[in-house]
Image 1: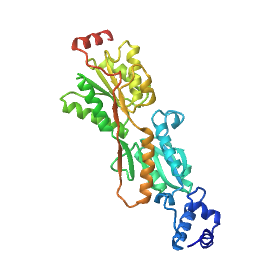
Image 2: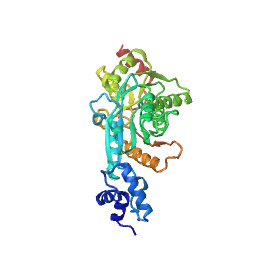
Image 3: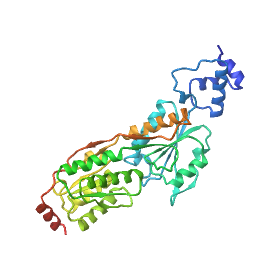
Length: 348
């Protein structure tokens, strides 16, 4: 059987380089790694069976994220946990993770991320609702396999990992209808694929129940946007008894403004969110929401990327991560019509 010394001589590299390749260590370019493995195969060297197939070729993965209102992805209550899931999965596979925030303006990529110049990068993970033009520009700039996280469209090539937005939002709305609510308003956000799916699920349930959808659209998904939505609710939607929010931050903003205006949650208005960020269980009253295993979201993206590298010719795959309704104190049974009139009168 071939020795590391023979492989090194045939491949034209050092014994140390052969050792790093055979033990799946970092610090070797993809071209060199591939050459060493081909020589090892030709010389009938038995590669360690404990290594997954993808790990014989991937040492570095690039993580690209959209710009966030927060100063860092680590300050974002949702995507910080997704990032940690990606980071942990890469660590488990001994993959080095490179990270760039994309420079995006007017839905266009202003300049390419520096990590695309790193020849060691074997695949890309794109996190967040990046505009189509940005995803296309990245695809033109790099042939590396990629996975979209929390982003999907039929015309976007490649694999994607999404949440069960429809199942989660349907469970929220059905819960509120079962509590007796008949006038439910949805606080939406930007045309993010997940937000679009959640809004459609809300509307579908109400239509099936022969109820009338009501929607307030907000430019973003922040607490401040939720506060503005609550002002519009009190001014223009006098019959509403339950507010279904596209995410937790909107719901927290709605609750805060309602309580500032003297509206009791849930006694006078039920409020629900989506994502189950940490703050959702700490606020008072605790927020009814949909739990998302955000760390698993990130880990699944890494697994899908490695699967794509193992099987580059397979058809595009969309993977959906399950979610779970979490009922807390912010939702309650519907008020009587007389009580609703009294609430509205008190705040007009």
